[in-house]
Image (cartoon, rainbow, N blue to C red; front, side, top):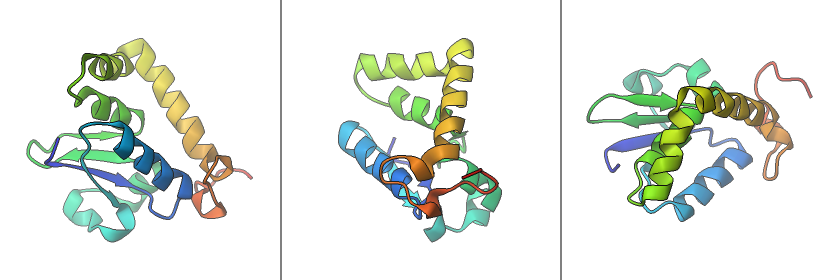
Length: 127
């Protein structure tokens, strides 16, 4: 997963903590950069893209994942069979919808979660 780039919100304490935890927990982890330090045009992303979702971009193939599928792709890229199976399950049609709803809920409430700050609030999300 070396050629991949994980793009996340560096202003969000919850997001930064989540990336740090995943980096420590997963054997194979891509380069991770806050979107605030990247050229979004070069990556083909918009401000709306990066304020709504975390993104995983495979720089070799151009394939990209966002939201819950970012996590599924990270798991699928691991060496062990259990993480790969979990990644496949999160990508399966029925569970994919559940994972996407879960991701959307966390994204909308990240400012209230441990490590979150007011800067983590999603635009338009109620207090």
